[in-house]
Image (cartoon, rainbow, N blue to C red):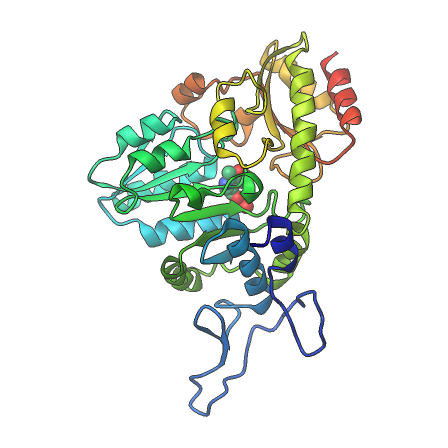
Length: 387
Ligand SMILES: Cc1ncc(COP(=O)(O)O)c(C=O)c1O
C-alpha cells in the first residue's frame, strides 16, 4: 500500500493527452452534453456527469481523490471552506428531534452553527466535558450524531476516539471527527469507526495561509448523498483553490513533522520559563493527554499548536502578544507562518463563560501556531516578548 506522502503527490491520478502530470486548473463552468437530448454529458468517476461547475470540476475532483487516499476512505468532497463542509454535513444529516453530543470545547463557529440549527429545527445539542467517557455517557436513544475535534481548540485536549469506538453503537450513532488539528499524518479517524472525517483545508492541507477550503471524507453512499446537498447548497471548492491545495498538500507530511518538532522544542522551552504558568501541549510527557495521544497517534508528533498561560493579567498578556515580532498576531493555524492569538477574543469567543472557566480558557491564555521558521529565531522572539 502506498504511503501518505506518495498519495499526497500522486493520488490525484490526473493524466491527459499531453502526458502532463500536474492537474490543470479547469476554469470552464460548462461542459458540453454528448447526446442530442441534452441528457448525457461526459462521465466523471463517482457516477456523476460533468455538466456544470457547481456540481463537479475536474481540478476539484483531482484533489478529492487525494483526500480520499489520505484519509483512507472510499470517497471525499471538497468545499469552499471548513465551515461549508461542516454546515452541509449537519444540514444533510440532522433531522428535527435528533440529539447531537459535542464536547463543550469546539471551534466557535461550529458552536454557533449548531446553536442556530438547534433553535430553528428542534435539534437538541448536549455539551459535555471533553472526554470520551463523558461523550459516551451522554449518548441516548435520541442521539444520532457525535461530533468531535480530534484535538480540542484551543486547549489541545485529545479525545480518546478508541474509547468512543469501543463503547458506542456506531452503527446507530454517527461519529463525525474534525481532523483539522491532527491531520492523517498522525491520526486516521476511520480506524476508530468515524463515519465522516472533516477538515478545514485552510489549515495544514493548504498549509500556506493563502487559501480557504474544507473537506468531508467518508463512505461512497454517504458522500454521494452529501454531494447532492453540496450541489444545492452551492459549497463546491472552486478550481483555482483546489489547485492551490493540491500543491500545498504535497508537502503536508514534511510540514507537519517540522511544525510538530518546532512546537515541541518551544513547548519544552516555555514549560521551564519563569514567566509562564502553564503549557498545554500533548507532546509534553507531563501533559494529562500525552498517553491518549501516544495511543492514538501513528507517529510521535503532536502538531504545531500549543497554548500557554502567561503569569500575569490580561494587560500583561496583551503586552506579550503585541511585542512578538516574527510570530504574527493572526487567527488560524497550521500554516508556514507562526501565529499567536488570544482565544477569548477569537477561537473560543462563543464558548460559554462558565465552560471557559472549567476548561481553563482564561484571560492569560495565548494559542500559538508554530510554523516553519527557524526554531531558534522563534524562541528568541518569545523570549524577548516575555522579558
Ligand atoms: C478545528 C476547526 N474546524 C473548522 C474550522 C473552520 O474552517 P474554515 O475557517 O476553513 O471555514 C476551523 C477554523 O479555524 C477550525 O479550527
